[in-house]
Length: 419
Image (cartoon, rainbow, N blue to C red):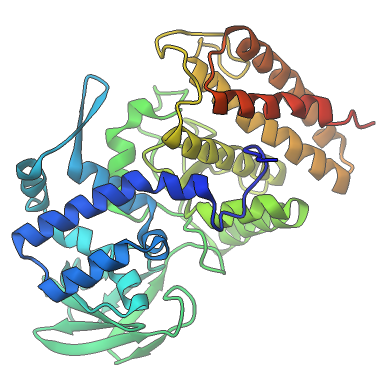
C-alpha cells in the first residue's frame, strides 16, 4: 500500500520527481533567455538542453541555492502572490550583478561529470572563489590582485585560467567532493564544513541562500522574531562540531536506516545556525535544505530535530503536487505547538512531522532504554492526539490529504505504550 508517512529511499521516487518540475521549468526558461542573449556557444547550449531532459542531470544540478536563484530570476511576488516574469524582466535581472555568470557557475560540476565543455568567468575576492556544490573554497596563489579567473569544464575535469594561461586543473573520476587530483602548484583548497562522505553541507556558504533567508524572513517559522540580529548565520565550525553532527546522522542511520536514506537522498544542506531565535525550520522555497539551531552535544535534541525538519521537507514535496489541505489560509485553529492560532496547513505540517518524531522516539527507546526518551515520546503523543482532533474536527482535506491524515492518525494506534 502506498505510504507517504513512511520514509523513502528517494530513488525513482515519483513525488520527488514531480516536485522537480517547477525547478526544471525555471531552468529551461533561463536557458531560453541565454540562447536569446547568445551568451553560450550554440553546440554547448544544445548539449545542455538535451542534458536537462534527463532526470539524473536535473537532480545533479538541483540544490537549495540554484532552486532559489532560478526562482529569484524568473518570478516576483506582490501582496502574497507569486507572478511569472516575462523575458524583458528576466533579461534585466540576468544582466545585473553578474547574475548570468552566477547561474552558469551552478552548472559546472554537473557539466564536468557529464563531459559538457562550459566556460565562464568567476569573480575573485582576494584571489579566491567558490564553485557552487564544491565543498572547497579555491585559492589562487599569488593572484590576490586579479579581478577574475576563467574556469572551463570537460570530462571529469575543471581547468583554471588567468590571463589565458592554465594555472591548474582539478581532475576526478567520480565525485568532485570526494578524492580529486590537482595539477599545478598555484592552487590551494580550503575545506568547507561538510560530512566526511560529502553528502551534506553544514554551512550557509552560497550567497543566494543567505539572500533567500533574508528576503523571506517573514515566511520562516521564527518564533522569536524580535531577535532579528541573531537569526541567519552559520556557526563557526570546529572539527569537533563536524564530528558531532556526523555522529547524530550516524545515529539515525543505525536506529532508522530507512529514514537516513531519505535524508541522504533529498537533503543537501543541513544549516547549523548560530541563533536562539528558533529551534529549526524549513521553507518550501529551499526544499532540499533544513535549518536547526546549534545544540552541541545534545544528541537527543539534534537527532529529533533532524527527523522533524526532514519530515517538513518531505511534506513540502507533497504540497508541490497536491493542495493536501483545502481550508482557507485565513482560517486559524489551535495548535499544540504554538501559542498563536495557526492555519490548518500549519497544524497538518506539525502533525505529520511529530507523527514521524513519535515513530523515531519509539525506535530510539527500543535501542536506548532511557526514561528521558520515554517521557519525550509520551509528551509528543499527547500533542499529536490534540492535533489529530483539531484536523479531524475542522480539516478540509484533498483525497491525498485524507490518505496522509489516516496514516498520521494510525501512529497513535500503532506506537505501543512502553514501560
